[in-house]
Length: 60
Image (cartoon, rainbow, N blue to C red; front, top):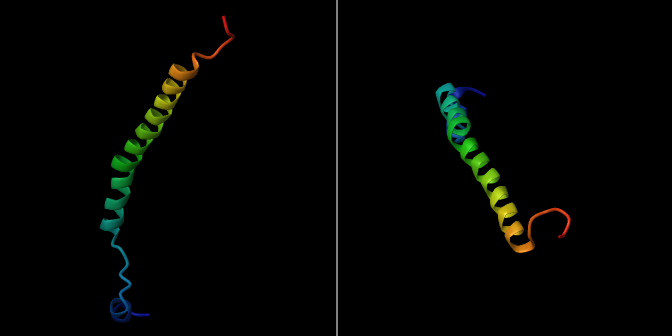
């Protein structure tokens, strides 16, 4: 398949620059924000469960 036929069919291959931009966007922005959100959400879940059910450990 040559370049003309791939452009006519609508299949455009991403350039190296576009792939690098997508990778850096994921690596620098999206994954760190997602990681902080997951860890923060888990911490909030533990905090709320301890405020409702009490701290872990044997009862006094």
